[in-house]
Amino acid sequence: MSVRILSGALLELGEDRITSADQDTERARVVAEVYEDERDSLLEEHPWNFALNRVGLARLTTVPAFGFAHGFGLPADCLSVIAVEPDVPFKIEGGDLLADSEAVSVRYVRRISDATQMPPTFRAALATRIAARICKKITGSSAEKERLESLYRDRLRTAKGRDAQGGGTPDALRPNLFVNARR
Image (cartoon, rainbow, N blue to C red):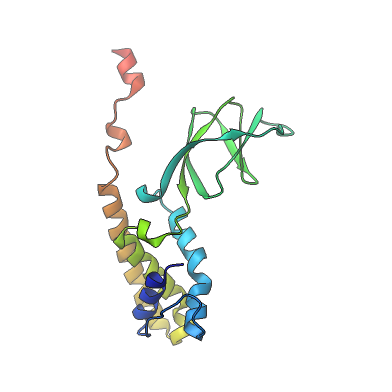
């Protein structure tokens, strides 16, 4: 848990920063209680370049009861699957990926626990999101909550813009194998 992000959320509310995630104060307990859910939700909502990972999945020994020929275990840190190779129909059920393919690789958004792996714009958006979430509990102010929600939207837009600039060649600009095969 990042004390820096937790303190950033409290500072947005006009509160003093904390020195430890398990500090014995009401505001520290409240901000720490929502941190992991808000972090994972924000990671899951967008295919952040810093959180993407690619991996070949291990095929499970048990066969799905019906609908698909094979099951594959998803990584423990998987928050959402972005793409599957080969490009085949699939379903995700109970933490497993079901498909008719003999082997499957995925591109997925992974849980990032170490805040130093998060870009500064993402950390700022996350701190503001947390501040907006706990605002009523800490300040009792609806107006302050609305201000923080607006600030969060602005910071989220900035973080997504920065993320889009650092991700390499967009998929649409990569050579299309189908088009090249027709030449």
